Image 1 (tube, rainbow, N blue to C red):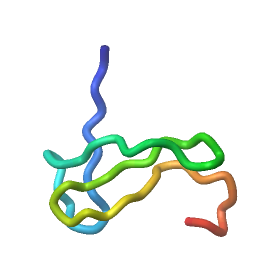
Image 2 (tube, rainbow, N blue to C red; image 1 turned 180 degrees about the vertical axis):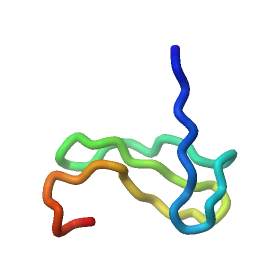
Image 3 (tube, rainbow, N blue to C red; image 1 turned 60 degrees about the vertical axis):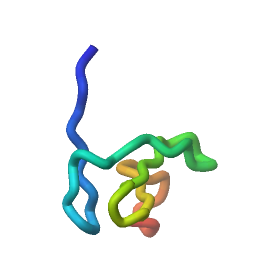
Length: 49
């Protein structure tokens, strides 16, 4: 299985990023354990970015 290194857009940490459920549209959400911010890589609408 391949692993993808995802960095936090807020603090740029790569070691504390974990998956944190899914959005209502079904996209994967991520959580940074260092700064406690959540984000997602894909959006349904471009205005949400």
